[in-house]
Length: 553
Image (cartoon, rainbow, N blue to C red):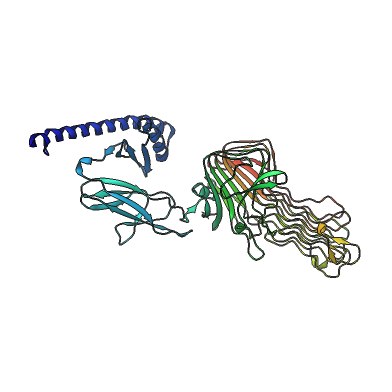
């Protein structure tokens, strides 16, 4: 019996021989697939992540459950139930199961706050055979001083650890995805490329002269997305507006109130293709109280974006302080960015019965300035009624109209930072003054009273950023300003400035539609000044360097 079934018996030796033969067969299969993939790796200069992706596809022809994980320069493979390491030099290392039980473990994330500089991970490991000798980080985690099982990470991502038992067996464990580290990115688009879940996120960018942190309200969609006006998107309001089916991105928490500026930029990230159907409008949220939209809307699509409907930031400019928005960093080190300050506002004219002056057009990605109010008085009261300059997040607001006779002297400039339009002057007699467009639009006056049709419209042009691998625009993309209040024989208020539209693509771009960032316009006698036209920029970043396809400035 001992000769047959003992530790060194015939059955045991036969089992070991079969195991060794099976391991040799697995190693040979992996080797064949690896060599086949390496031909393409060398020809196309693929990185380790791409090599892992292609090898996994090959191995799944034999084992549908096969996985390949890139860790630094190595590949961690599980194939036909066996754990295998493939080094950068091509050495294939199989686990030796004859040595005993494999360790087990898991990774717990200790730090959970948003916007932290580092996150702590704890690896909890055990084995039924021997002891745990070492926990080895494989891709960037650093052992916390004074501990043996706690590690600190300063970048977002998934982390892997190799657990070694005293019997020589090892096991690989991975963490859940770390997503709350506020790591520094080269640009806002690069930071968004690393986001892999919905919710409030922060992206920190080392800009031209300062480091900026942007707060984002993200809707993340894994896979292709068709916005058809019928299907709901989780976290997105869907309804009707202006005869169109509409998807509204963002919530009231993203926009300004009467006492606080807007806080967040809304982001739609689609990992796949994005199609917007005919008759469908996509826009950012607007304040229910008239205080504008969020700090811009960004659509980020890893595949092809096809627009057959409308993408709009018209009247969605934010009531917020302007700041440089570093969208893209070129390989030479310079930035494609929206400047904190946009076009200047129009100055109210000094001569009587004169239309308002237009806001300045935006250049180099800037928004347009707000128009001034019209003037009906030979001596404008203290020069008030001017339009405001634009910001990175809003076209400038319009100034109030200045009528012939004043008693209350309430005429006002458009507020800075995408605020309210300027109020028209209070007057006696039959003269009328319009309010400027803004967030909200301002009151116009008829005599000492008010009249709704003389109020400036709510809204300014907002910031719109679109990135996709390829873009086919067949319809409308807009970020227009709104009209000042008034009418014929009314000294009308100024209109608000257009926003800033910034379109980036990697491979292909085709446009059969209209892209506009116009300021508001009123075509009447004694009209207020037009809002300045905002910037429109379209360009390729496929080479790493921005190459302009179109600009309107």
